[in-house]
Length: 112
Length: 114
Image 1 (cartoon, each protein chain N blue to C red):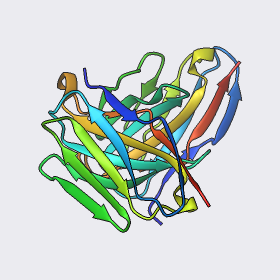
Image 2: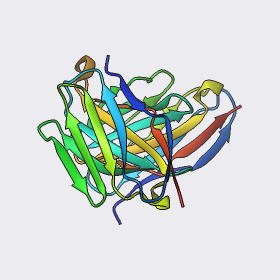
Image 3: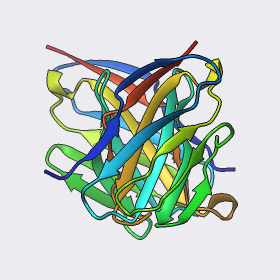
Image 4: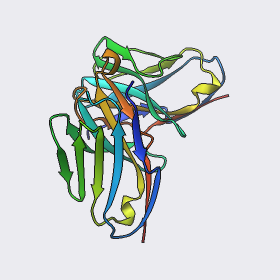
């Protein structure tokens, strides 16, 4: 089954404790992206990747890092999480940047 | 800077009505526009993708149109059903600020009453 998976689905952590949210797709897609969704602000793009080793900032990249060492994986790293990073995070992928995006189920993060 | 607006923010209609959801964007230099559906607590499901060279796309009871020159798209839902209740989001991609970003609207929350 074609899908985008994210882990973990729910995470509670404390300020400053490094964490990684994994994202994997099995559709051989080139384009992958991370978003955060906050009430009243909608979805905002954090980072995206056009292909392996090619990443670029979205609208809200501060406090986040990404890497794209393999085509299927695109982890989101929070080196020192802060409470304002409490949010619902989505990973998405598409064949290329101009094609239909497929979204993962989301990761709900609470930073205390 | 590209901005995407969806009006209304919420909509409640009786079952069977035909309805139109609106999406407007400020920068007409887009690659495509995509409509999504999001159910509470769930991820997004793509409904329709319109490339910049296209005027409309159809899937079942859904029809999406695109007018780049006026910066508008509409999603038409025919014969609405309670199962259509969800939040509908539009997103545009394009070379804003020299990069290939996706910008989302804040959505229209639709409730179809049985």
